[in-house]
Length: 64
Image 1 (cartoon, one colour):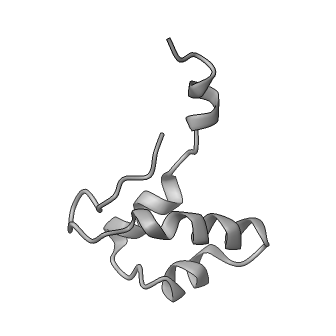
Image 2 (tube, helix red, strand yellow):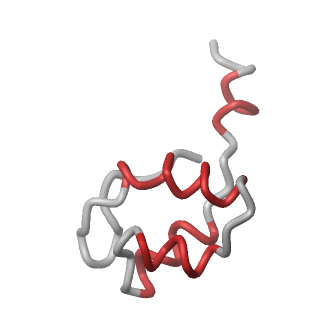
């Protein structure tokens, strides 16, 4: 749903990198090169970015 502030496994702060990653991926850059340039070298951090599905807009429709 929402990108976590820290990596679940190693604890590295990654939440501030999501907007830049998303912008560059939508511009057509290769995801591996973007992750490398953002400093995400560990597979645990990379997995969070690659497998994340942004659903906040869909869920926000159903707020109580």
